Structure formats: structure tokens, C-alpha cells
Image (cartoon, rainbow, N blue to C red; front, top):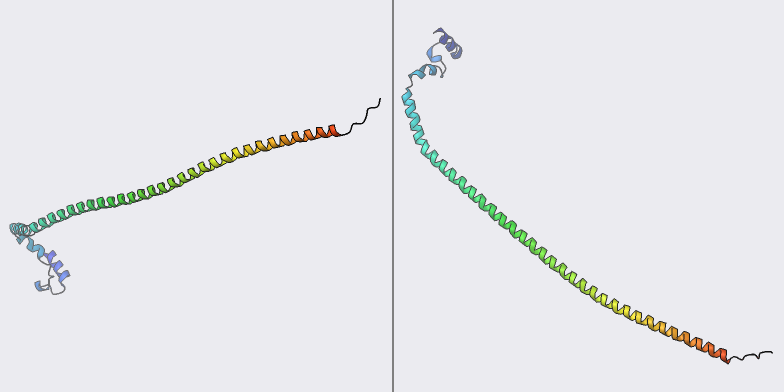
Length: 162
């Protein structure tokens, strides 16, 4: 047709002959000549050639993925074990610290009891000393009164005038 001549002229340049046509020219016109059964057989051949390898690769990849999942789970378990170990170490440190402070508290309590005993003894002693001092003061006071009474009796009394 005249339409294909125009296309050929635009694409191929000036000559207009079949040798001047572009390499893609004519492919569209050749397509109806391809046997569909041959295409189907070639496709099946290509698929049958590569499909087993691809299926084996797919299975290998699935197995690899499953192994990776198992490996990840195992790693997570090991990590949690390490975390547990660390927490046990922390607990041990807390227990030793608690024991240390418990010992300090026991020592402080013993010191307080000892100080309480000492203060009780000192209070008793202070009370005895105070009582002794009061008794001595009372005795001195009584002694002074006796001496004053004696002096009164010894002082000369003037004779009464009648």
C-alpha cells in the first residue's frame, strides 16, 4: 500500500528501495508467519530447562530462611540467658550490699545498747551522788544549827533588871 511506502521513505532516507529500509522494517509483516505451536514448544522447552533449577533454588532458599529463623530464635534465647546472668550478678551484688548494711545496723544497735547501759549507770550514780550531797548538806545544816544553839547558850546573858 501507499501508506507503507510513505513510512519507508521517512524511515529509510532517499533511495526508496528495499535495501535502504531500517532493520526493524518488515518484522510486523513477518509475525503472522511464526508458528504458534513452535512458540509454545519453545516456551515449554525453556521452562522445562530452567524450572527444575529454579524450584531447587526456591527450596534451598526456603530451607535457608527456616534455618535463619531457627538461628535467630536460638540467638535470642542465648541473649536472654546472658541478661538473666547479668541480673543474677546484680542480685548477688545487692545481697552482699544488704549484708554489709545489715552488719552496720547490728553494730549500731549494739553500740546504742551499750551507750544506753552506760547512761543508765551514770544516771543511777548521779542520783546517788545527789542524794549523798543532799544528805551531807542536811547534816552540815544541822551541825551549823547545833553550833549556833551552843553559841547562844555560851554567850553571856545580861542580868535582868528588876
